Image (cartoon, rainbow over all chains, first blue to last red; front, side):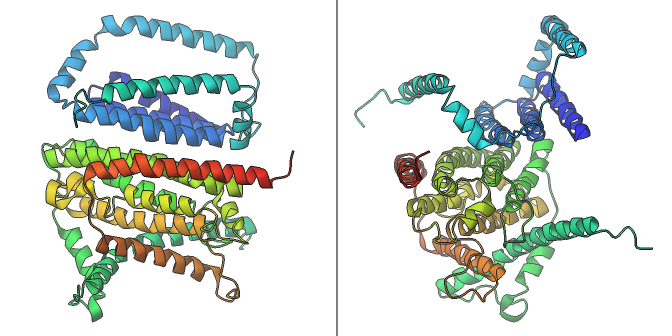
Length: 166
Length: 332
C-alpha cells in the first residue's frame, strides 16, 4: 500500500512540475489532469473513496474540460510556446521557488517533530460526507450556494444578448 | 509437488479470468455490433445489407478488420503527436473501464466497488477528453468545430445524467451497482423511476454521440467531425469505442432500471446471465432502431432540450423520489 502511495505522490509532483514548466498549454493541461487523477488515487488509498470519485468527476471531468475548451478556442500556435519560454526566466520563478522551499522546510520540520497521527484508519463514505455537510457545516454549504448563485447571475448577464428584438 | 496451488491462488486466477472474459466479450460484441447494426438498418429500410462475405454476410466484420489493419496508419505532419495518439486510447480505455463496475450476474463481475456508479460518472467525464484532444490535435477546422460541439453537448448531458440516476441511488441507498440490483428484487426501477429512465436513456445516447445526437460528427456539415484526420486502426478504435459505449450504456440501463440479472416472475428457470444478456441486447437494438428512424435535430435545439426540458425533469424527479422515500422510512 505504501509503495502505491509514493508512486502516486511522485506522479502528482512530477506532473504538477510539468504544468508549470511546460510551454504547450494543452500539454500543460494534460499534465494537470494527470496530477488531479493521482491525487484522486491518494484519496482512494487514504480511505476516502467518495472524495476520490468527486475529484475525478468534478475536477478532472468537468472543470478541466472547461479549461481545455477555452484553450482549444484560443488558436495557440508555435509563437505562444516561444513567448512562454521567454516568460519563464529565473527572475520570474526564483521568488516563488524560495517561498515554496520555505513551506517544504516547515512541513519537514513538523513531520520531524513526530506530532502527527496516521491517516487512513477510518473509511469516509458518501453518507458521512453528507451528514457533516448538512449538519455542522450547513452554513458553509449555504454560503457556497449563494456564491454559485452570484456566479450564475453574472454568467447570465454576460451571455445575454443586447438586442432584445429577437 | 503442487503445494503452491492454494485456494487463494485459484481465487485470484478465477477473478482474472472473469475480468478477461468480460473484457473480450465486450470488445467482441462491440466489434460485431458494426455488422449487426448495418444488417438491422438494412432490414428496417427494406434492403439486403452486407451479404457477400460468408453466409448472410456474417464474416463482413472479418473483412472490415483486415482492411482496417492493413490501411496506412497515417499521422498528419501538422498534428500534435502526443494528444493525437492519446485520444483513441482514452476513448476506448475509459468506456471499457466503466464496463468493469457492471455486475453481470450475482457472482460474475470484474469489480464490486462501493462507489460503482460514481466510478461510471468519472469515466464518462474523462471520456470527453478523447473527443477534445482528437479535435484539437488534428489541427483541422471541421475537427475543431466537431470537438467544440461534442464538449458542450457532453458536459450539458452529463449534468442531468448524474441527476437522473440519483433517484435510483436514493431508492437503493447505495452507489454500489450490486446493491442497486438487489434493491430491485420486488419491483424493477423502471416503474418508480420512469422519468429517471427516460432522461438517462436520452443522456446515454447523447454522451456516446449516437444518432440523433451525433451533431459532433455530422457528415453533412462537418465531414465526420473530430475524427476526420484519423485513419487505420486509430480510427478503428474510435469506431469500436462508439459501439463499446452502446453496449456499456445498454448494460447500465439494464442494471439500474431493469433489475440486472433478475428474472421476470415465474421464469426463474432461465439463468441470470441469459436475462442480463437478453435485456442488454434489447436496448442495443433500441439504440439501432433510434438511429434508423429519427431525424437529426439542429444543434441549438439539442442544447435547449437538455437544459430546459431534461434538467428540470430530473430535478423534480429527484425531489419527488426523496420526498416519497422520506415519507416511507420510519422516523429516526
